[in-house]
Length: 178
Image (cartoon, rainbow, N blue to C red):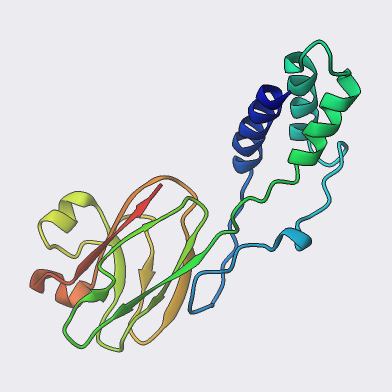
């Protein structure tokens, strides 16, 4: 029984973790995790992931455990909390840097850029970033001076950005989305 429950929990975390979506927030700190008593009540009709978990639980339960007991275990673990997306802060400094200049976030998290009047936060290619250039990436973000903007990152990869007026001085940053 313990092995079946462990497998169901592990599969449940993988299956349920795939469907995370992003929201943006202007919060100055990462969003808190959802408390256990506020987790949504998940029913079999709410998501196919629960049905998959029921099938796995029934297939992996020991012979001495009734299939409906294994299915109940699957429903119980389907309400496992998935970390809520977080909003991280990146700001420009008087020293012509981004703070932080190197940030690692999860897929679905957001970054709120707060940019001083004489700076930008402009997404560039890796080649432009390596050369301390300032040519914007086509389709990338471009936060103008004196503003704040929150951007969601929903795909894993590395994002490179610079301050257009100060890229040649090394004012650049990197976000690793994993």
